[in-house]
Image (cartoon, rainbow, N blue to C red):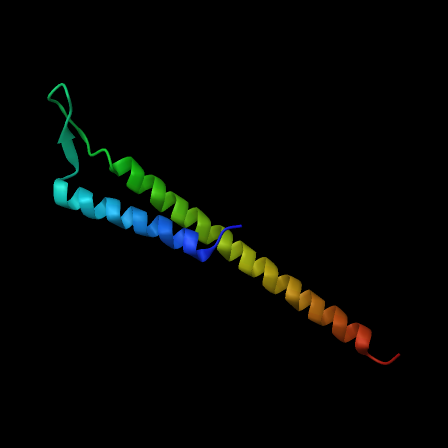
Length: 83
C-alpha cells in the first residue's frame, strides 16, 4: 500500500538529483569527448514521475474511502429509522 511517506521520499530524491544537476550542469562529457545529458536527469525525471503517480493514487484512495464512509453512514441512518 502506498503511503504519503513513500511519495515524499520520491520527491526528496528528485530534489536531491535536481540540486546536483544544478551544481554540476545539465550536460557532461562522455568517454568519447562529446557532450551528453547529465546522468542524473533520468533519475530526477523517474523520481518525480513516481512522486506524481503516488500522489494521484493517494488522492484516489482518499476519495474512495470518503465515499465508502458516506455510503456506510447513509445506510446506517436509513436502517436505524423506525418503520
